[in-house]
Amino acid sequence: IFAAVEMAPRDPILGLNESFAADARSEKVNLGVGVYYDDNGKIPLLAAVRTAEKARLEAAPARGYQPIEGPAAYNGAVQNLLFGTDSALLADGKVVTAQALGGTGALKIGADYIRRLLPGATVYISDPSWENHRALFEAAGFPVENYPYYEAGTRGVNFAGMKARLDTLQPGSVVVLHACCHNPTGADLSDAQWNEVVEVCRARGLVPFLDMAYQGFADGIEPDAVAVRAFSASGLQFFISSSFSKSFSLYGERVGALSIVTAGKDESARVLSQLKRVIRTNYSNPPTHGGAIVAAVLNSAELRQMWEDELGGMRDRIRAMRTGLVEQLKAEGVAQDFSFVVKQRGMFSYTGLSAAQVESLKSDFGIYAVSTGRICLAALNSKNIGYVAKAIAQVVKA
Ligand code: PMP
Image (cartoon, rainbow, N blue to C red):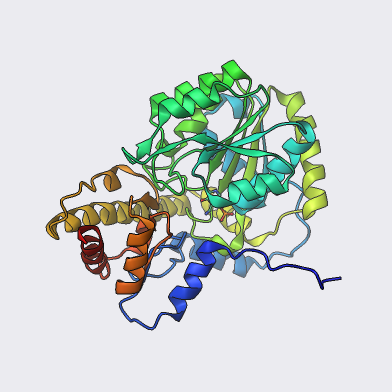
């Protein structure tokens, strides 16, 4: 039965990691990664997480099945982060939330549910987008198309192009929007532009699907929820996938959630019942550990403060790397203006480096990046930033 099976194409980023691991140069740097590293180049285990884990270990809870949609303590905490504790939508029972297997799992159950709800819909993703968006929605059975997003000239958003395209879409089209810290470009919409997107979605009858993988990595928990708040105020129905992979540094625990905003309590009950069918036939119910840790942290005033401080530390470190890189490039005599790196948000930057420049960073310096020129700022640290700046300066001046 497997004789004719062909080799699937390699994941380009995993391929990059393999080449990096095989590189013998001690000064090598991997800027192709999609995770946050601390100043020692390690994935942190947050103190808030460690404290909650210790308490959980001591309590030694039994491991029964969870509710299909996950526990209320977790889902409620997710809702408060996304919508704010004073949200009228929450008070009115207009939000359905289900714990999911990371942000990816949330997108997947959302996609499967929308496929049942709107089988003829087309899904629109930004150009470019996180590479799994297309694959995931196509695997759920949708045609997937792009809307204009990144503008190479300004290294920002081509908002006029984006809006003009959204304005032509069929009612019922699904529009996937990066709620903050756009991956891969680092270019986000302004608050005013979010309001315009909300109005286009309303006018055209579109189905917004916000993907929130980096809440707290740009300006903070509250300010990073601006897109969620703009859609919440609109009275529209929409979807949000959210993830704690980055903000809690819990990548391997697979902790995320799907939230759906409905028109009212009764609709919420019906939507939840359908969403539970999707989950039941996928993986039955979510795993316990990661969600329990996140809920314990978010539902304790003390641990929550500890987490917010640690999250702030990660955010500040990324910012410091952004400013540091721009300053050091200048100090290396690079004439080209790299100040856009400071304006971009989250872990990533589209640097504008060409595929050939990325290739010479790798071959001449052992610095690995994605061929599109995307780099992860959280892979820079006080020890390697000088080396990276020197190397980039050399390839851009060549
Ligand atoms: N959406 C975006 C935009 C992402 O960048 C990522 C993670 N790289 C995800 C979703 C998936 O998150 P998770 O690792 O929690 O599945």
